[in-house]
Length: 117
Length: 115
Image 1: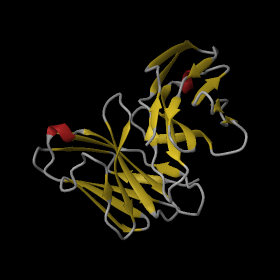
Image 2 (image 1 turned 60 degrees about the vertical axis):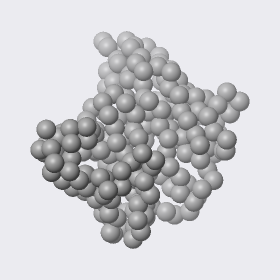
Image 3 (image 1 turned 90 degrees about the horizontal axis):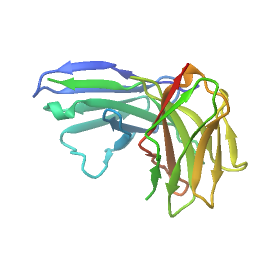
Image 4 (image 1 turned 180 degrees about the vertical axis):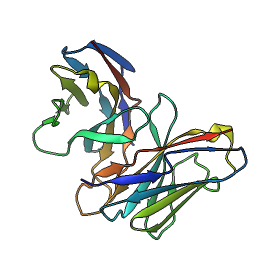
């Protein structure tokens, strides 16, 4: 089956620093990648959708300048949390999809736990 | 726009008992429906999905869900649960119409199976 990896799985950083999270599709080419955020005991909230080679589409309320998304290749998307603050602490999950026509399943990564001190 | 309601935030059940996790959705267009399972500190795994055809869909580990259009529901059931089924379960919906479709998730139901 399709595999999506994320790196790192956990990261702890100081307030004010930037953190980069990588999302890779290991055995397929992901035309579209999604970034979600999940607070403890809550659902996944879509942050942004990125298509390879183009700018990401952010959901309402998500700061584009704070959450920088790059989808430079068909197998890699990165999310950079700039000037992180404690309120950015969360579980970040990416998913990837290969466009083949009709319905295309999203495959989810294992998530990255970000803790900002 | 779509929305998903999972009325139960937590469902405790004894091992080998049956369980039903409820999911209702709202949408102005035709939808695809999904159930995902999330184990602690892990990402989501697709459990089962309804795209078209038979309204009853099954997973390989004994779960099933039935799409009921008139009641706009997609409840998840298992006749006999195991301890290992303890996890968070998310119902999700995606509309059929657009070229790419995003998933809208419910708030999740924690299934707690005890011996």
